[in-house]
Length: 210
Image (cartoon, rainbow, N blue to C red; front, side, top):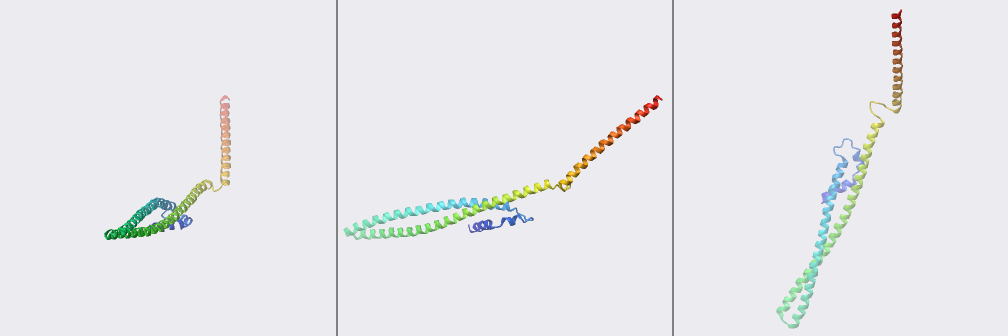
């Protein structure tokens, strides 16, 4: 139990931002926090059940004290009757019974008082634990957001600044312009070649006619 509280306190108070900056870390801080959060939820559920059981035990102690108190009252009435009859054996038995039940009531009252204080202490710790688990959930969401931003930023950086292609939009624009110029040059050269070929064919036909 103490080990869990120590780990829970460390997790909540740890600066997760510094964990994210550890590039060579072997353990993903988000995975680590997810593990702690799952464990904390399980422990919270188990401790909640223990608190419910403690409450039921306190109620049973109170029920036992009530029964003992009623029996003590009954034996006191019987003691009065026995004393009125003067029968020593009944008087002795009734006195021992009164002492036994009154002693039981006293012990149960002390136990109930102690159980009440313990239950209050456990309930305060349980509330603190639930707050810490909630803080852990907030940190978990913060870390998930940071990791999501980091991944999105990396993807956008690869798109805005593609490697081994263009270092800027100006380079891309220049490439497109050059590509267009090369296309026009190629088309112009092809047209000239066709005209030369046609001229050569016409000249050959003229010579055949002569």
